[in-house]
Amino acid sequence: MWTRFRHLLELIRFSHTIFALPFAMLSAVLAWRRPDSPFEWRDLVGILLCMVFARSAAMAFNRLVDRGIDADNPRTARRHIPAGLLSVWAVTAFTVATSLAFVASTLIFLPNTLPVILSVPVLLVLLGYSYAKRFTAWCHYWLSAALMLSPLAAWIAIRGTIEWPPVLIAAVVFFWVGGFDILYSCQDAEFDRERRLFSIPSRWGVPRALRLAAVSHALTVAGLLGLWSVAGLGPVFLAGVIVVAVLLFYEHSLVRPEDLTRVNLAFFHVNAVISLGLLVVTLADLWWTRAR
Image (cartoon, rainbow, N blue to C red; front, side, top):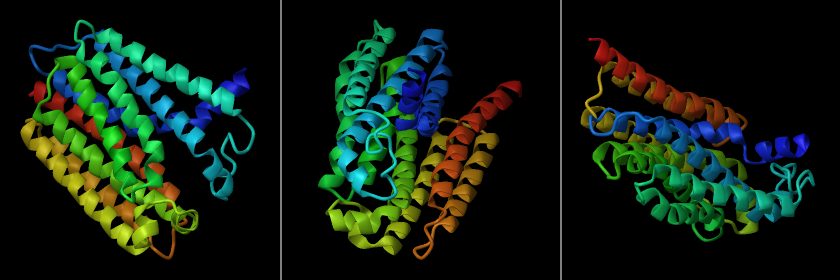
């Protein structure tokens, strides 16, 4: 049982939760600054549960839908379903269980009914991403649109409204995730062309894809500067934005059309530092402002 549980955590890459969760928490922290929506443990628990269950359901569903493609791709042939470490039935049951758990977790926010009402549409967007590569080269931005829902959802769960701070955080996530997913997909450009799967690298080539990813990440920095201005954040956050810009430049320096061997380093390590770092500098900025 423990081995199967470990395999499930590996299947959904539980550690990759750090990509979206810090942005949901960043949105929540800014919402809790408002006098009419003070911090409540219930909100924190609800956000954490919803994030974990929603992402787990989406990732497991993706592995189910792509199991045939994964089996044919040398890079992914060792994933759990093609390798026989987990059965289709077990992953299906896990997907259903985590989907139901996500919807049930939104009940924590009652009497705010918006999270409950929006839970199924949000889940459909998350699961729908798994089919995007079959019909659109812009599938990378379906993924980023799915992840950008996290800061919007956190704000709605706490305040029941949509305001500029979560919209700008969502824009940051949209361009950031879209950019690094384009980088990651460069590894499979030739395979995708052979299998008639859609992606920006397979359709327009790796050099153009890298340029588009760079533009996307430039817009990420612009979004962070907009958040700094609109949310009334201070110099600590601004310094963090400068560091993020440097890290994104470094990320792009790791990946070249003729050398994709360091894509995984750029994808996981650099982006993990960016997501967690932004949350840390936001907390530090708010503490510094209050200390003054």
